[in-house]
Amino acid sequence: MELRDFQKLIDAKYGKRDRQRGTPATYMWFIEEVGELATALHGSDQAEKEGEFADVLAWLCTLANINGVDLEEACKKYTERGVEGFK
Image (tube, rainbow, N blue to C red; front, side, top):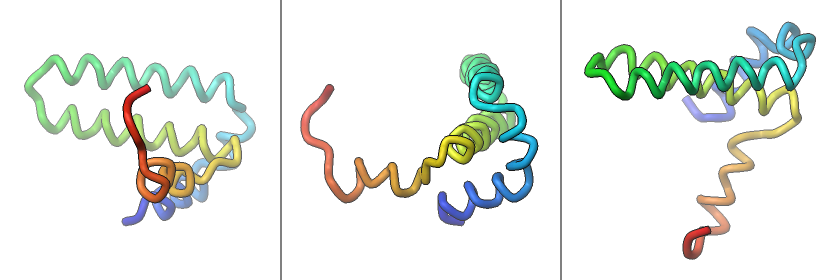
């Protein structure tokens, strides 16, 4: 599955509710998932790590959707335009 397809799937499944929730509350959910990922990374349960990575990606897609950002297009910053040096 392409990133754009996953983002569209998340939007189709959750988009209406996500837009009603808005960016600030959605961002808080995203941060909570990042915290859960951080906890999972300290453990040894691979399935838990994979699940938390999936959750973080899904919430990132949600944030992008409600803010009109196509993540696949945004990632061209790294794939097509190239990245030189470090920030």
